[in-house]
Image (spheres, rainbow, N blue to C red):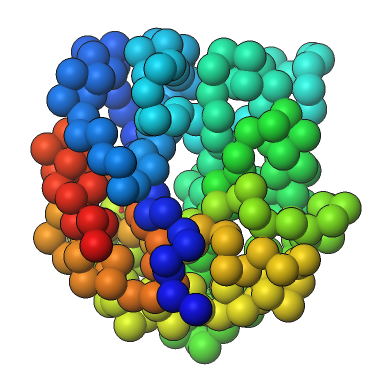
Length: 251
Ligand code: 13P
């Protein structure tokens, strides 16, 4: 089966960038394609403003991280239910920067994932291998370990309301995206893993590619059967570049 049933997604991960000015610029200039879902992940500080501006549109907004409890004495953190109450619809979880810089272990990612689903948000589960893992032939093992950890904490793995973002660590912020062949090969393995480990959702789950995605090259990536869209970092801060990526997913 091809990608026919899966609507493409173009998602912007602004990381620790942006301002109210950038939010306004996006609201005014963002393309609003009907052939793709557009998701924006600003900082938590800017979520409310963007959610309000896009309230009656098809654009969805989400956060880049949550803590794995609902409320309490967790200074500096926010919960998935607070994000939902503020108009957010999605949350990234397991981004490689969270894993490497902030110590989010597989176990913590699994707990966060659970809270995100319980709050009614769509989790975008980020997975990906390091260069070292790829060079030692352990790329899929690493990704599979990340998927298994989440599935173990999940009562009934059902991926229909989940997106997965394959983001090889070596391609993030390097200017060197994975080749279409490399991304497709891993994303087919991920879909196969979902097929084996969940209740029949493998054709529905959207698997995005992330890592140095730009307007140039996006069409070759999206042409691959198991690449259903993109999670864009640096290039997502430039609305024209982001619009070009949206244009590229029009098939
Ligand atoms: P870049 O597009 O800047 O490589 O970042 C990718 C990413 O980490 C998206 O989550």
